[in-house]
Length: 166
Ligand SMILES: CC(C)(COP(=O)(O)OP(=O)(O)OC[C@H]1O[C@@H](n2cnc3c(N)ncnc32)[C@H](O)[C@@H]1OP(=O)(O)O)[C@@H](O)C(=O)NCCC(=O)NCCS
Image 1 (cartoon, rainbow, N blue to C red):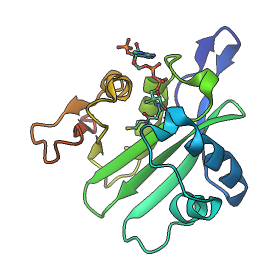
Image 2 (image 1 turned 180 degrees about the vertical axis):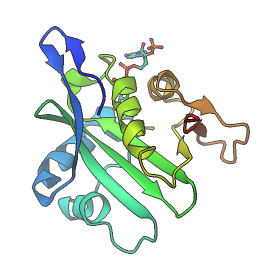
Image 3 (image 1 turned 90 degrees about the horizontal axis):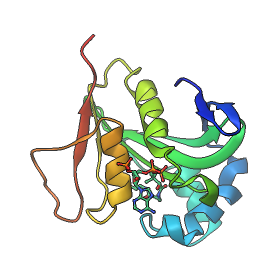
């Protein structure tokens, strides 16, 4: 868990809670928010939210999905997926308008990386934002990600960070 954030509202803590069925409505409303939908494919229905984010079926990777909590307040969503290699991929969004573009992104990502690199098999973490998503790219850079030497897909920017040497 990261150090508490010192804010105007006092010291606040970022936490991650596994997504549950009860989060479905909240996730659906966040995903339909144009500020999020610009970068994430909006779901066609609430059922699709359940299938893609709550009980993902038919995929072989180890997929984990979490609600981002600022103290007790749900403010966004973050996920990780592993394919059995040493690499894990992550994605996130801040769903609450009041908490986007306030400088929280890098802190959330850094905190999640602590959890990800707490998994012994994982040595590398990747993200693949759109080249136009300069805010996400900047937040990932602040959290330690760098552009990969190999860029297999021109529609995305592959970025990576390696586990720090112990
Ligand atoms: C991407 C996201 C998680 C980043 O978190 P955030 O808390 O909003 O980002 P920050 O406030 O820390 O800003 C990151 C950088 O963008 C810059 N930035 C913030 N708001 C900006 C704005 N409106 N215009 C231009 N730059 C802006 C900041 O200056 C900061 O860069 P700097 O620290 O080098 O100055 C969040 O914006 C989000 O959820 N966006 C919608 C979904 C999305 O894009 N998800 C990522 C998919 S890969």
